[in-house]
Amino acid sequence: MKILFYTGKGGVGKSTIAAATAWQLSQKNRVLIVSLDPAHNLGDIFGVTLKNKKAQFTEKLFLKEINLQKLSRDYLQREINVLSSTYKYLQTLNLDDYFSVLKYSPGIEEYALLTSIEETVRNETDFDYIIFDTPPTGLTLRFLALPRITITWIDRLIQIRQKILEKRYTIQKIRGTSKEEIVLNYSEEDDDVLKRLRTLNDNYQALNSILQGEDCSIVLVFNPDILSLKESQRLIEGLYDLNLPLRLFIDNKVNEENRKIADRIEKNIKSMAKDVPIERVSLSKALLNGKGGKLYDIPEDTISKLHIR
Ligand SMILES: Nc1ncnc2c1ncn2[C@@H]1O[C@H](COP(=O)(O)OP(=O)(O)OP(=O)(O)O)[C@@H](O)[C@H]1O
Ligand SMILES: [Mg+2]
Image (tube, rainbow, N blue to C red; front, side):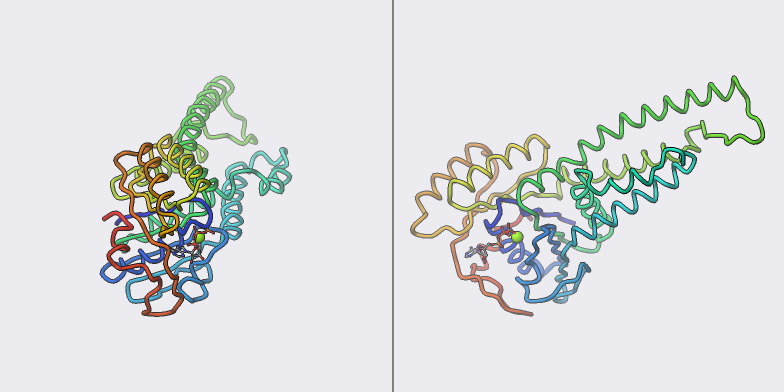
């Protein structure tokens, strides 16, 4: 299974290019295209209404729009359930107060998005391609950075937890227990917190290997203009820092008038990422129509170059 992320500045044509590519690939392959952008237009592009569920568009093409608000709520609720069942014995701390403000905590949307990507990749294994249409740069870089940040944190938390269990064990040995007392687990196999940390660690390690692996490709779309160049430069640096596989650039909306700027901008981009190819897409008419129709006035042989095989 191949995984493709279409990234870039707002409005450069990520959704358009991702949709056209998904459409063409689905002529021969099973393709799922997922929009991670809170401001969706995947449904509009294909002329259908999508309701936060995977929908079959043609025999081999499936569409899905993520509802970020619902995803964040569900994610938070799941975490709260785990926390409250794991920390039942800490009722005195009044965790309810803590939970009620947790929803304002930074990073919830990014974690929710990442969890959704992880679940999609883990569950949708009968697709040949999963294509993710991403939100604008900032949010995308933040959620792509999360696995590495999280793994570092979890590793540290596991060490701290192991220390706590060691201390519990020592105290237990010294004191023994009376009958009325709640005995806290002190062996690693019985400790729910440690088990949970290890599961999280495995999930994020797996996701990180997928994101950095051979079958994942990040495609960066830009336009021949200076603002788009600046944002692409930031994205290229971010992806290199994160060791993520940037494999293709698409210079979209090129025409006679902006051809010279396009040349200059491509040269600039090339100087930052020498081995990554650049494909050009002309400014063309976007055709909106439904089932079985051609979506964009972009030549088929151009579309065939807009992904990594
Ligand atoms: N090659 C093209 N020729 C003509 N119009 C295009 C082309 N590519 C994209 N467009 C148009 O540009 C607009 C923005 O495209 P699109 O929505 O795909 O960008 P996006 O990067 O996904 O934007 P957002 O960041 O808002 O999600 C749309 O109106 C789309 O039809
Ligand atoms: Mg879009």
